[in-house]
Amino acid sequence: MGVVAGVDMQHGEIRREEVMTHVMFALNSAREGQQDNLWFYNTQLHASEELANYIESHMNRALQHGEFKMFLQPKIELKTGKLVGAEALVRWIKADGTMIFPNQFIPLFEQNGFSVELDMYMVEQVCRQIRFWMDSYGVSIPISVNQSKLLFYQDNYVEKLCELIERYQVPARMITLEILEGLAMEDARGLNDRLLELKEKGFRISMDDFGSGYSSFNTLSSLDIDELKLDRGFLMEMHGSRRERQQLILEQIAQLAGKMNITTVAEGVETREDEEIILQAGCDYGQGYYYSRPIDAQVFTEIYF
Image (cartoon, rainbow, N blue to C red; front, side):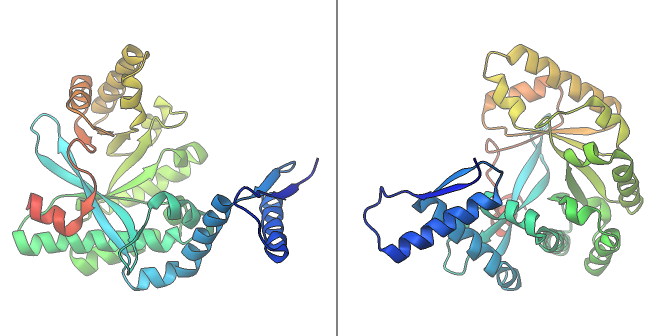
């Protein structure tokens, strides 16, 4: 069949020149995708392309001008209800106050490699925040920060991290590096070598979104991690017909992790019922909108310090 492009005319008449532009856009989109695709130009497709172009043409400037802001979401100890840590999340807030959402720019950054720069920028923001808390209040809490695959395997990755904690005089144990489970599926041995290198420096390691894909209990035995973050899908399934099975699986994961000295964090806690489910299952910590949405670091400090 090949590729076919067309124009969606539902939005009224347009000039011949615009039609040709739209046809070429749809044709290029079809060629970039899989074979035997049928693509139509429409305003939604065009808006997505415009946003992608804006993101790629402004990402470096946005980083230089501090438009990428660190938001924090608290991590709560289930047995005591106390704050025990936070996760750093990035938000792109433009100079005019409008926001570009993470799901709009992070996948693109992972494709074009800009995630490497942004991830290191976020690690520095974490170090700066911890240093601020230590200087201002004499205490701090650990912060976890996501690390992309591209950054994780760079030759000088560990050296860059050590340079940052030395510059800000922050203990490595205060920083938890979050990696995705998929990394273990690709090269468990190579990943574990890197994890051991990081742990020797004092960093803590967390596996994020466990259970979102084809999770394996072997993953827990093969990797030297400190924390397991359970995907929010576990709690979503609890409200369906598979609740009993999901509860059993959740309990087994928490029990196994505990025996291996791995703490468990349940993500997506949105209700009191959710909290009761993960507490009963034996999870250690909870994170989600039930406790707080991600908030600006300054607001977080005002609330919790």
